[in-house]
Length: 411
Image (cartoon, rainbow, N blue to C red; front, side, top):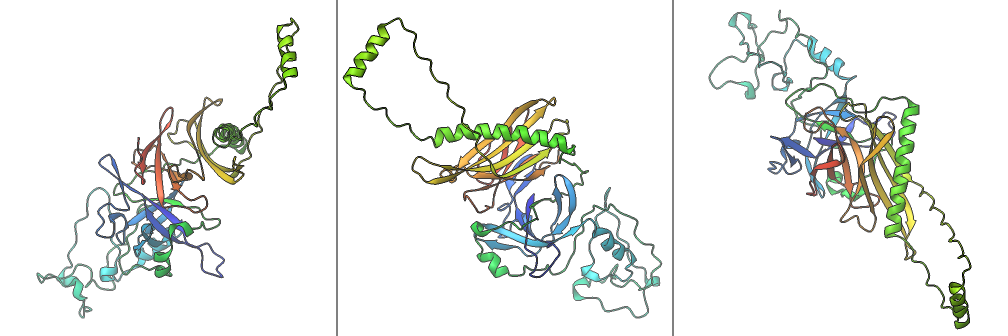
């Protein structure tokens, strides 16, 4: 699994860019998660080997495919780049491949077949052309056998390949396209990474086994989504108020000492049978306003009990008079259309980011191939910049459980 970070479009372009940075996250193998940024690195990690194909998703919905281009090391780890081939572009590409009659040797894209590998067909001497073109040196067989496709005639009586799965990933051989400025990318530290406006990060999966679509984004009416958002916001504000009171409460000034005359008067009143003065009721603290609010709605296990993911921040003034920022990531599940159960309440502030980084949701994704979605967050130790560390949560009946953390935490 990788994260696709959009690159800005060329200057003067009116179309959104299709170029993405490919950031490896994790590899799920034999029931265990491994850090894909270092897994089998020699020195390039296996997840970024050139020509590896990833399927891009958003909310579980397929968005296209992307092939790994040129990998390069950066101060924050290895990354690669590539161009996203959207689903609308794939039929045109396959139509062009269907009418192509002259193979292109080693540049011909390999074809993946399900249900067993197809048997290769050798070219017969009867169908060989009179003047066959010279085959490249890389295609010359050491055993002296004729090449199967390089010497095929231009006008072949073979039928066009049958229609295949439109979501089938395509591998393209040849020299991968490099980044527009690899030197700049290599020198760019992670703290300078900024989000491209209007283009969210995507999740990408590369798997040898094809799986059906799993749409995790909640497809409910707008009124229902607003009801879920209101409940999640109120719960987040209450949790933030408690955190601020605990960590940023301003101590009350000490009471002035009473004079001896007033003290004796108070003692006389205490011994008299007069009714004590009522204690004034304290007003509830106002709900802290939320900033940078992001709310996402999912149904991770398709039980019609949605999960609401809210991330936000709040500016507060500490006891020292300095301004601070508090960050919250909260996940709430609605059950039976009325009961709201918190699955995760994660609050930190800019004085504790080295130990408790802030979390920003990337997307819901099926990370282990069981059909149930997990929640992928980006964790960062900087109040403003986006980091290259990731945390993956699996949803349980009562809470979220960390199944992978690139920083090492797990439960």
